[in-house]
Amino acid sequence: MEINKKRVLGWIALIAGILFLVWLVRTYCIGSYRISTPSMENALHTGDYVLVNKFPDQGRLKHNGIFLFTSPLWQDRDDSPLLVSRCIALPGDTIEVSDDGYTVNGVLYPRSPYSLSTYVFSTELKTVMLNILKELDIPLRSDMKEDYFSISLSLTSFEEYRIREELTVRMNELFARKEIDSYKLVVPRKDVMYELGEGFLTACREAIRMETNDKAEFRDHRLFLDNEEVVSFSFSQDYYWLLSDNINEAIDSRYLGFISYDHIIGNAWFCWYSKDKERSFKKLN
Image (cartoon, rainbow, N blue to C red):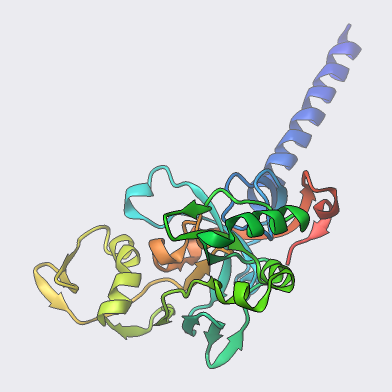
């Protein structure tokens, strides 16, 4: 009877050890997550399962990598949702976003071939376009909109190319990509003093709220601490600029501002399951 008790206790200890090891790995090393939004279409689809590297190494934060992070908004501090986006700029980078892509420190990085842009075409092309989309097996995404004069939908640059090959010269003139709003920013680096211009202050508003424990006041695009106007600010953390590939259905730095290092969980590097079998067991780009 005594031998059986020792054996049972041994098995319990072994199982507990295995469970603890699994918890340790998932919490601090590598975790599996299900993508629940279309924010990274077409690099990631809703329902895909990915592995996320959580090792605390700032060197893994690289341009164009896909990262899982928590919302930096002050209102989300107690129950922060998980988000996924692409790292566009690192601490200290100067970034300029335009239709051509992302210019970081003077170097132009074209948009990911998986990223989605908004395209507009005349309603007189509706029947033709729907037939072409069907023939080419291009999905009608959920953000498609129609008014009296035009229809807008999201496409990748390769999908645009395939569609244009099917259109006449005149039809191509009625089919155009919608321009995005251009802007230029410097991404804050730890312990560096930055002047608070209007655009920069808007982008780092939530970061300053977090760093001052919500003691900051914003009036007429100016910052006040203890009722004193502050024209420059030094950040205690490194920050990043993260943007999603699907700009029409994403919450990213355009709405959240700069993302601090302590809000980044890890980089999503491997898709181990997808309904699209060709995407399963593939490294992410």
